[in-house]
Amino acid sequence: EPEGLAPLLRAACASLVVFGFDSAGRESNEHARRMIAKGCVCAILFGRNVESPEQVKSLCSDMKLEALAHGRKLLVMADQEGGRVARFGGEQSFTDIPSAREVASCSAGTGAVTSIAKVMAAELKAVGVDMDLAPVLDVDSNPNNPVIGDRAFSSNSARVAELGGAFITAMQEQGVATCAKHFPGHGDTIQDSHEVMPLIKHGRARLLETEIPPFRRAIENDVAAIMVGHLSVPELQSPAEVQLGLPASMSREIVDFLRKGLGFKGAVLVDDMEMGAVTTSGTVGDAVVRALNAGADLLPVCHSESLQNEAIDAIYRAVKAGEVSAERFEGAVKSVETLLSWASPPARDLTIVG
Image 1: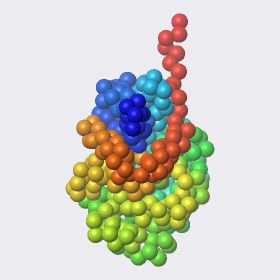
Image 2: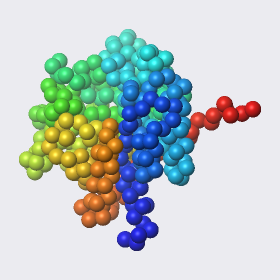
Image 3: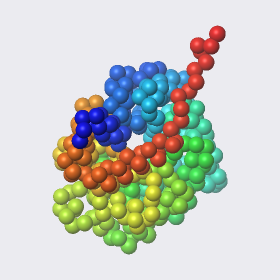
Image 4: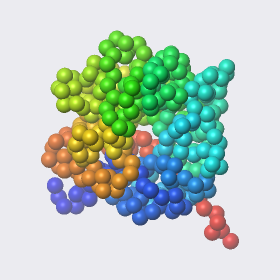
């Protein structure tokens, strides 16, 4: 390719990698600035980045200004589910949100979910967070599940679909994108994918009856993104994928089922590529290329700058070598561009006036 195109291609590769960084400053730290300069257009915040609403607003705005200086938008996302998984809570002067299970237990049901999603969306929007990595659409059917539990709305699939659908609609109507997770269903596992790869043993019929309907509803409600989990689901995967020990997040069969079978047109995310389920079996670079080839569009590498760079380099090499087809690469880049329509502009700072 002509030399002039290399930086453009590299930036396009970087646009597929979501980066996290370790700082709760009012401005982007050096790590965040370097990733934005490389072409990353999506950042993820964790509790470590949050001190107060003012500080988060300032941090998001500063990152968005950095991106703007490179002629790009920046989308900020976070896991704000409520309950155990909430990056913004009372201690940081945000509203404490109850867990999905608690909200679902209200007699108001859908009404309660709608009200709470509106509060969450208003707070996220106020501080410059554009996308919530919620709702959890896993069906809480296994009491021994160490990772889902009260993060799920219910053990009843139809109830999860109804409440999850209401959450998506309410939040997106307020202008905050949502991301349903963890496709095709992390509810009935006894392992935690942060450590090892859980196995979902159910047959296709049971999966279509229980695990899949909440995601079907999410798609009907125009969910902006769906996160595919690091789960082994042999009944939905090809024998070759199962033999290689590939999780759903690196399974073309599963992403094809999501796209063609269920008609999902939004962005496909995978869970954090630094999780144990992925890293125990190879390098992050190999994993992101596999996920991209499977059909994933956005690849979060949430912590380490060196692994974020490894991911970008691996995508760049694979695209140049033709290991990732031009069609698949362009499809992913387009998906991310579409998702960026949710990215809010930097907050206008009035402190300099007068």
